[in-house]
Length: 135
Image (cartoon, rainbow, N blue to C red; front, side, top):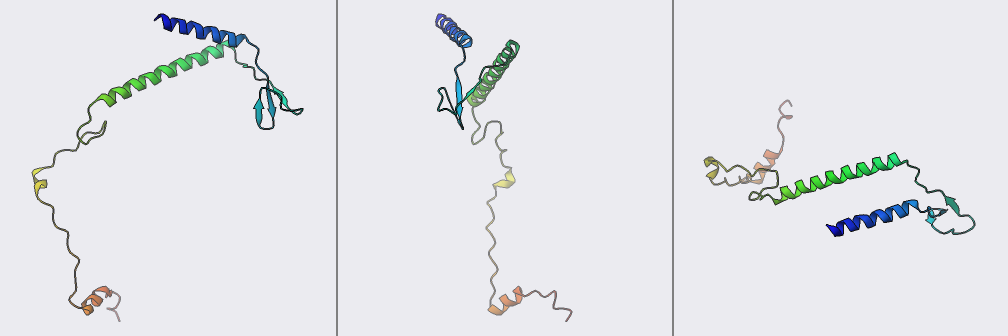
């Protein structure tokens, strides 16, 4: 507990020191941004944070809410993952019902393709006759 309090105090000191420090210069050279000018055509940019203290506080509160929601979702996910899974099932999906007594019969064999005794019978079966009746 003491180590945690010390860590929080140290991080607050670092944050306070960074907030009071003047911003470092940022230069733009084409599509590249750097802390040092890259040549005579370098443009110095103003990168100060223009938000008010109220906006900072609102952003911090939103971050805290999001963090609490993420922790709640993580706890729920871990609880669901800890539940035993039904044999062959998936989390949240009930296992299939047991088959009825009718389903105990062996499956039927697939039908065999009809074979013709002669080549002539095969050709006659393949020719459509509906259009030839009116001639």
